[in-house]
Length: 256
Image (cartoon, rainbow, N blue to C red; front, side):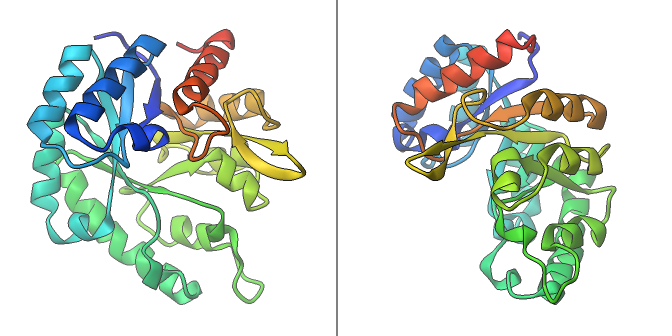
């Protein structure tokens, strides 16, 4: 199995991964593009054993997954078993459940509750991370940003970050600074760029936008990031082409 620090976030190609047959085709295409690993997210239902067989058949690894918070909280043993089957040691929550998005107090509540859930998963050999969007950079009553509350009031031994570079910039933040802030507790980073199209910010392939990638890559190295996961929620063209352009640019910068 080739070693790599780069993976494709399958949420990018979710429209092409709705059935097991679709997932198999998409994995094959991602392998042909040059990816040796994926983050499983946004796909249609598939049995873990079947997914593992597909991954092994393509010589690919599952770098991480996204899972809903409810099954993590209510059925941690099942979540652990699924990840053991597919050979994956990282999971993340794709977004904060709506009930917790109300105030600084509800963010603190989530930090505490999620830490307890993450502890159970870590005890079973699975790391837990939080994936941000831009709404977590809201400040309540002049206080710290909600994302600061989440990371500052959670258990740093188990509550990790999956910083999304695009969404940090979208919220007015500096992704390199946030990555450095999470040093030692950020196994995963979402790489996506921000460009301007018709006067509005859009997601673009890595290297095709305006983010400061030399500084972001430097920060990732300093913080000990394990997986650089390429994602583009929306694409102007073919999402597979976008993933290829991102990978080609990353490789041209010396990443493997």
